[in-house]
Image 1: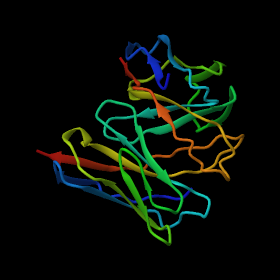
Image 2 (image 1 turned 180 degrees about the vertical axis):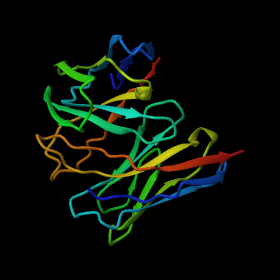
Image 3 (image 1 turned 135 degrees about the vertical axis):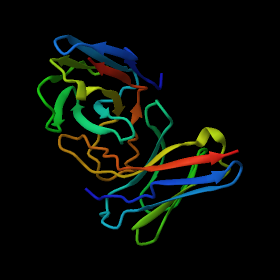
Length: 119
Length: 113
């Protein structure tokens, strides 16, 4: 299995709703990531998990709450979102590594994303 | 983190080679150059990466200049399915054995029939 699976593919939610995005991989990758992508813009990093621990939070508002229950799963819990949070949310995974030495060939594998609309 | 500069858009004819340039003049000695592409409404797809030697795989070739300040991604025989946004990224290293992949604006490649 060489895929990252994201569910749901589309989500419409109201500003008072609570919803969750799910991401799953079975490649044995120990680093997982959430990105946000607005239309015609590049993906922006939100969170990085390494060995199931949150290692990087790119100053993301608290209405986005990530969770990594195990090495294969990554969730993004959403609460009290704003219409400007509407975007494509991408999950990715990679081998975790020191990044120094070796070939550094730790490419990311991305899912197809969840297209979120906040109304 | 080293930044990259790419042309906003390019086009090429189907069947011809597409050469996508990238400048990364502040790259440090242990940073790799990665290329990804994103076809409309899909997640980014890894293409190729390199440190200082030229690299080739089934998708593309990567030519890195000797001073490592720039590189070129070559799609040898572009097809319509290669129409996408192509991102040149210099890999940075993060804490706790993870690292960040930061996307720049990319090049929008249009392959014409």
